[in-house]
Image (tube, rainbow, N blue to C red; front, side):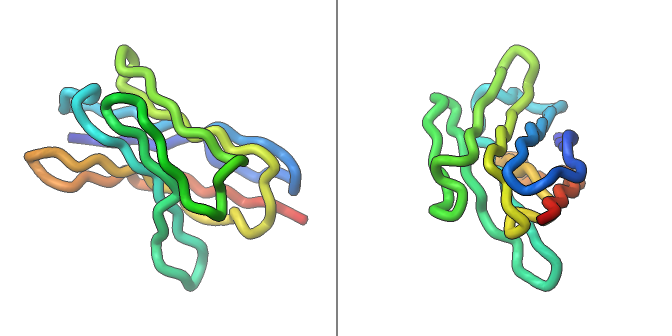
Length: 114
């Protein structure tokens, strides 16, 4: 299983970004996909998840600003991030857990300037 996250970059506060995470080597539609982030000097934290049934849940810090979706045909999950703040600056990772293991993408850096 391989996960490839993309879409990070530099954005001003109040701006938007959309991250993508494409999965290969797995029956993507069967699995929950999670997004995490890790800011410098902090532990990795859960941003949100989307289940195989497209149910979503979010950390309180991003609720109402971030939206997770998935396209099972493209085997891709999206993290739409609106109204970004400097506190959202982090490396963002996608994660998939299957019977074969716990898989992580390499991460994509999001930097929000004030």
